[in-house]
Amino acid sequence: MSILKDLNFEIRKALDADKELYSHLHAKMINDIQKATLVTDLSVGTANTLISYGEGLEMNFESNNFVLRLYQIFGK
Image (cartoon, rainbow, N blue to C red; front, side):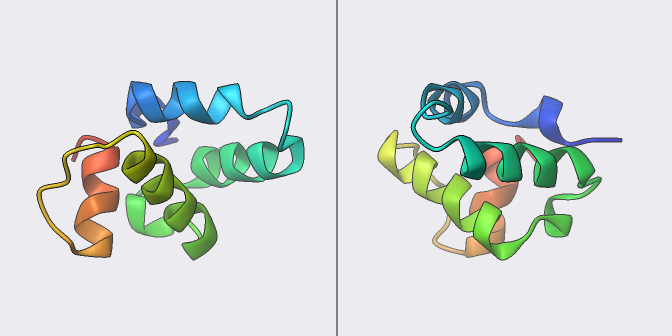
C-alpha cells in the first residue's frame, strides 16, 4: 500500500508544478513514495526534498526532528 495518497496536498501540488523543470527528480520521488508503505521506507534524498518543499511552503512544523517533520508531511 502506497503512502502517496497521504502526501500533503500543498506539497504534492508544488512537486507536480516542478515536474516539467525537474522531470527525472519528480519521477524518482513519485516512484519512491509509491513504493513506500511506511514513511521510514523513503530514501533520505526523497525525504529531505519533501521537507524542503514543506519549508518553502512555510509549513508549520511541530518539531525540528527530521522524522517527525516527515510524518507530519504525510499527516501521521
